[in-house]
Length: 77
Image 1: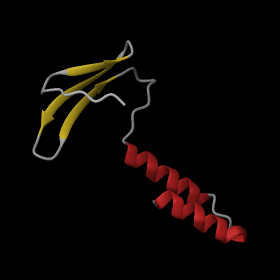
Image 2: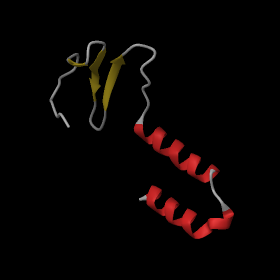
Image 3: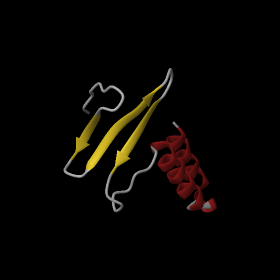
Image 4: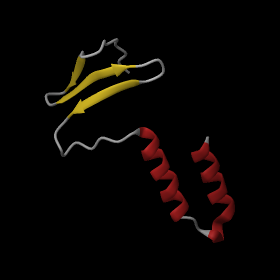
């Protein structure tokens, strides 16, 4: 993991075509702008985690309840 400090209006470049710009810095949050090609998917991590939990719930098999409960416990840790 790379950790760097940036000020407002400063940016970092990932590869040749992704730029992450610091837009605003508040007391408890940072606003960032991401400039990337449309084919590059960008999502908040918590939304992806929720999606994964929902997919697991949709794949629930009542005939194997103990195993499914253990999987859900692991996902919710």
